[in-house]
Length: 90
Image (tube, rainbow, N blue to C red; front, side, top):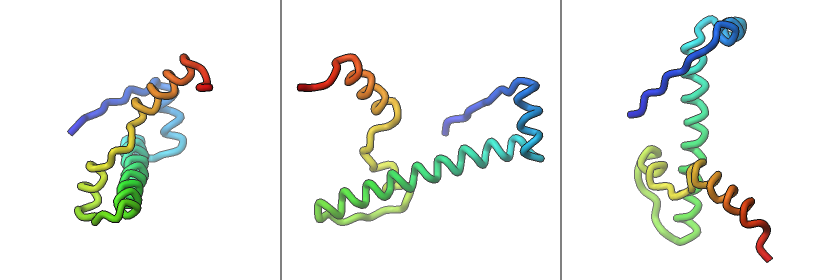
C-alpha cells in the first residue's frame, strides 16, 4: 500500500488551520473521498462495459475497480500530449 507525505509551508499551514480544526484529518478525508469517487467511476464503467457485451458482472466493488481497464491519468495525459504534438488527424 503506498504511503504519501505532504509538506506545507507555514503560510499554507495557517491557511489550512483557518478552515479546519484538524488539518491531517481534512487532508486524509479529501484524498479518501476523491479516491472513493474515482472508484465509483471505475466500477460503473466496468459494469456498463460488461452489460453492453452481454457478460455477467461479479465481485466486490474493490475487485471490480481493480479489473477496470480505463486508462489512468498518466496514459490519458500521454495520449493528449501525443495528439498535440502530432496535430489534428486529417
